[in-house]
Amino acid sequence: MTWMLPPSEAALPLRSRNAQIAAVLALAALMVCTRGQHFATVDALPSASWAVFFLAGALLRPAWLFPALFVLSSLLDLASLALGRVTDWCLSPAYWALALAYGALWWGGRVYARMHRDRIATVPVLVLSLLAISAVAYLISKGGFYFLSGRYPDATWAGFLDRIPRYYPRTLGTLAGYVGAGFVVYAVARLFESRQRAGAAA
Image (cartoon, rainbow, N blue to C red):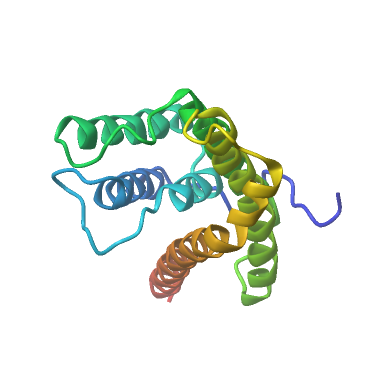
């Protein structure tokens, strides 16, 4: 596809080892601080898990980080349950649909990374990417829970479709907010890096 750069020419994922490490630590910390109700949760913040997987797919190279992040998210859920901060409502056979939804978000980040350019004209591409991949992840995650968890014995397609206008906009807004903030940080870091290089060359 002509609108996608070869991996050797793409601006993403991050190339610097130090940048990769910083991004991993920042994304892991963001998940720890916003997921569930455990000892390190910042209660005022909505969960950043969806954004973490999208950003990890876009920014990071090693594929093994995907299962590592999923294990981290699962451990945080179990910690919240063990501490009595949450009930077992969400822990059902449908929990594994989350792995597929997070995989879709990771893959979406990977695809977006090939389209990314370090300029403002990329923003519409990012917006469309988030709209598309969030819809897929929502159908997998929320649809899996609705139909497979056993929490809704009378589940119907009409019932599921009725829930989308109530819950999807908030999910999309949270995802877009965190991803937008992530790319603002990325842009500032790139600007700082370019100025450092210019100063060293002067």
